[in-house]
Length: 275
Image (cartoon, rainbow, N blue to C red):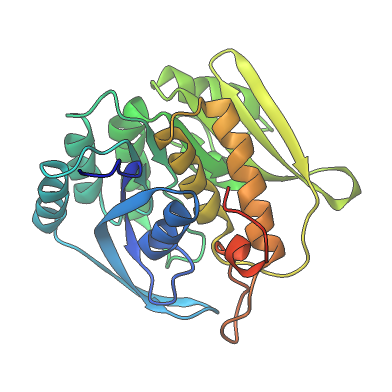
């Protein structure tokens, strides 16, 4: 008899040689949350725990072939879309996921450590807004990243317009905006979940000391895992935050650069079960 399978998630993203971000980090988070991950590589990074030196994008036909082979073989329960690489990649991924409108899609496209791509970045932001946001269940971004995207529909340097930008995101068809890492009182940080109707939840967390690589990737991957497991978005956001904060509190310095979240912290502590 065939055993019941774990929820399956397909992630699109970069290949990171140290496993801090990108698909390697996603697969670790999925496994830690009781899911199985499949992956489509959009770009290959050259870097270490301190910095990313270069990036090589994958041809769009290869992205299509990777995804179609997986999707024709497995019943995917959630999509996660990370760093996209190029306008052509965005268009191809948008075409692929459009065939599966009932599968939740988590969009977490920003990696601040990636090399600046100049005008190409502006074109990618516009393509993401037009092609991917309308299909997105939850879009995860910091205030800085949201402002960067918002410059595709308003003047740069505008006053603090987070609530208005959140409504604009909803107008494009995205169900939820998850704004992360906002500074607040006592040196803490806040994460706020928005829908078209306004704030859905607002969670405050203690800022942990140290410089981390992979915190955002862990959070978005954990949300994808929770949605694949059947949770509603507000509950998934809370569970994912708790998991991410625990992984960060157990972070490890495996190289000479930034700390990396320990996504298997529960396996290293006697008696502690996975989430």
